[in-house]
Image (cartoon, rainbow, N blue to C red; front, side, top):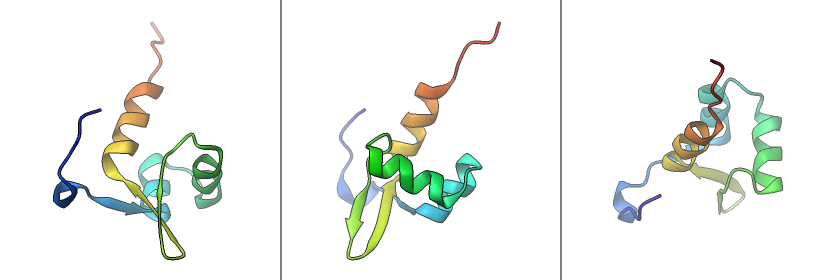
Length: 65
């Protein structure tokens, strides 16, 4: 993972991450609470940087062949 200027970081909502990953919002909240998916608290809202989701998905691929 490389450092990105803060102006280039796109923050996603839990609902957006759930849609991207095709999971329920509750599952995304669980992933955040267990530390599997690092997130930011902005007031009472949770935001996940887009690059974190991309990195998580890349690491999660398994070779089926």
